[in-house]
Image 1 (cartoon, helix red, strand yellow):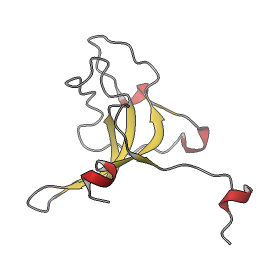
Image 2 (cartoon, one colour):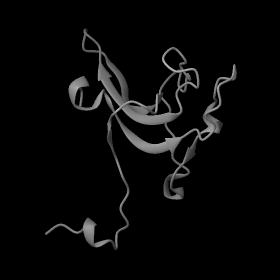
Image 3 (cartoon, one colour):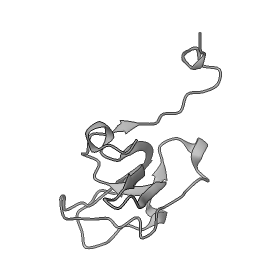
Amino acid sequence: MDTKDCNKYGFWIGYVDPDRTVDDYYHQPSDFTWLYEACEYFVKWDEEQPNDNKKKLPEGQNCVQLWFRTNSNGKVLGDGNFDDEYCTEKKGYICQVPVGCACSQTQ
């Protein structure tokens, strides 16, 4: 999972800040919401997240990824916790499939 070429160190999980206005307000954890209610009680932000970084886009970071990365010394960063990210980043994604759905059955 720790490869920038494959997934830019994270995967989209369907947790977003729907308010994408450009302002001086830095978004807080309570501003984010799940696209699907099944996960609504699970939240695991990484340390100092969300930080709503606005360096790349003025509306900030409004989408959430599961994040894992190691630095050059091998120290784990992220460790699979939540990190806000720019919604324009191309990443893999983790999706939810209902148990009764035919596409969730292994052959």
